[in-house]
Length: 533
Image 1 (cartoon, rainbow, N blue to C red):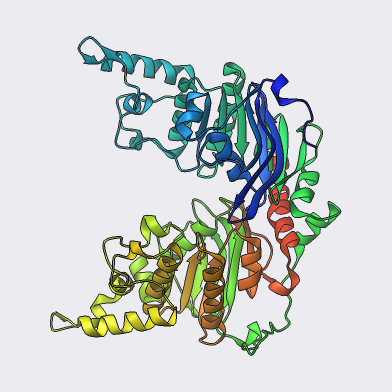
Image 2: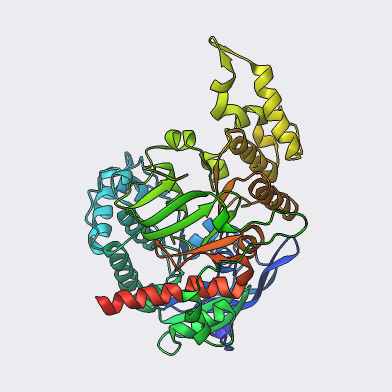
């Protein structure tokens, strides 16, 4: 349970009865958590439990609506990350912030360059940077660009640089997600070393329990915006953490769920939707024992006319699987069949010709084209369809694009720059772009990310209609338990780069069962690795 000591009397970064609401919906409800100097607190919880929200409040990115935040006995109200940093609270996010086109030295002193009588003292900055890298045993050339180094090294650099900002408390958000094998081990050892050497309080968010138990002094589990566990890591077993996150009554249930097999019965849809039995549908895609640099044993089967949900924790391999189908990640082992024929992914263009169409998770980064209007964003991939003898029929192209946009009930002016539309309508534009490519397998990565409840419901209806009435095979990646259950016919669960058992009919699932599979299997898989090693 949360500590009850008076925050003013303690050293530490403390949240006391903190609440945060988004559009009236609580993301945190009365959360009390403390991190003391020299202590590592492992923060865990299911998708949407409030972990990132708590970190953003501590870091000054968000303001809490209720409760108090204390820093070494003094109540604080950080208005920005810069203010938090100036007070000794630094954050290293999963998306690294170092500028890849600048040198290690330039990144180390960015915005706080050392100056001498004649201007910026580059030699002194270079010396201080080398001393910092040597101190934390990071083997780099301080004059080389940061982008020359792998993600693991950049992660270590960012943490080291954070300690030069008079940091007393360090917040780490999923620092091992992009790492693997020895890189993970090195980073964990590094964090423990830095915490002890610098008397640094560390809050680390991570869904991999074996990694947290390796370095954490305390484990804090958030469930639906509330603290469910706050205990010494040596006193709380893995099973109890999984049980709390999954919301089940007995830890035994956690591991029973891993062996669930897909039943053979028909998936019957309500409200007039098509009833079908998977065995009578044509196989769209069959993946057997797929291995890539990020995946180590994926088995997937999807039929025409169904929605297959891909569920898992951050870094479980869902996005990497879709990238592999597009030909962006190289296959090491395994086999794929696409509509009954062997399939070796080459590149996204070839995948598109074969009927595979992908909708990215990062709408702003690699989705919309900001300077184009809605119509042009939709038709961009299929411009060649409307060209004859070197002439583009703009009228035909716009007519088809507008028809699809109208069917999706786009709200806003589609003739203006697409950025003038709301986030939900921008997402609909990307869906329209996918539809206009006439896919046979539609792959969507977090398709309702950043949209409101109404648009989310519309997108869910659209996906189920396209599958059940038009015979499309739809793969949906989502971190939201409720969304996966709402939109899917069957669900495949990813854990540590592999799928757990066979896909499961959605009738046999609920939120607790999904969390059992994701968290319970994570513990089981990693415990197996430990015993094998």
